[in-house]
Amino acid sequence: MQGRLHFRPDVPGLDASYMPRRHSPVWKAPLPGWKQMLDEASAKMTSAVLPPIFFRADDIGVASKAFDALCSLFRFYRVPLAMAVIPAWLSETRQEKVFRAAPVDEDLWNWHQHGWRHINWQKDGAKSEFGSDRSPERQYEDILQGRTKMERIFGPNFTPVFSPPWNRFSTAALRALGKLDFKGISATAPLPPGVKSLCGIKHLPTRLDLHTRMAKNPAGDYALLIDQFSGISKMKGLTGILIHHQQMTPFAFEFLDRMLYNLKYVIRARFSSFKEMLKNTDERQADARLR
Ligand SMILES: [Zn+2]
Figure 1: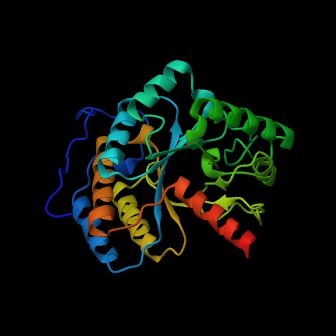
Figure 2: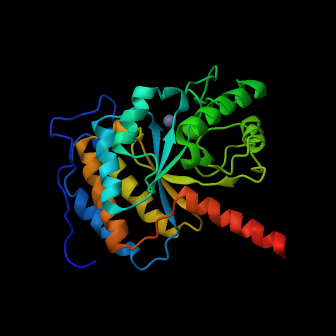
């Protein structure tokens, strides 16, 4: 594509005073020189052979200005977005509003399951909805309930992938996913300790988390983020980038806009989607059967 695109300093639907209640320190306000740092890192990535990239947006189920803005951004760049839906959050009214911003059958959205209720069952330590403190039977029931609701609401547009809340899961959850015919699981790479095999389920790993960052020092964290972004060019397999729109400030939107622009038009990355990745697996399996 030639020339300059319609590149927006303001994202539609968000005014300058918009600020989410919860956000990482790095996204509070635009950092001096942020654009230059991102552009320089992007320019260096043009010579690398990049892995296919996908985007996943978590905690979907309630429409908001930020959700509308997120959908417009991905529609603008025609980049697929895997929507991790919390099944229990969806009421009829909420569904209607979500589908107004992202029509259910629009090809860009890969609707898939993000747990069941997104609640923490661990008595202590790291949060998890499908961890060691929930019995295998309960985990199975929760996943089944979620899947049943997802299929009822999304019909043929449901992608059989599971993103565990907080990116954590037990082998019991994995077994339940296998029984319930899930084809993919999307969680942070590497796999949790103790999980040796995925029981034939494809892993769709995320490697860059944009919005739930805990570091206190914005400048230091931004430098780290740019480093992690550059690191994508050294990845071998599929690489997912994680979004939490509820925690996105106007600066976070501006950054994502620029990052999408650079990935698409400067770096010329190849974007993949859950649908495409599962289709590839199916074809390989069919191929193997033929031989
Ligand atoms: Zn979540």
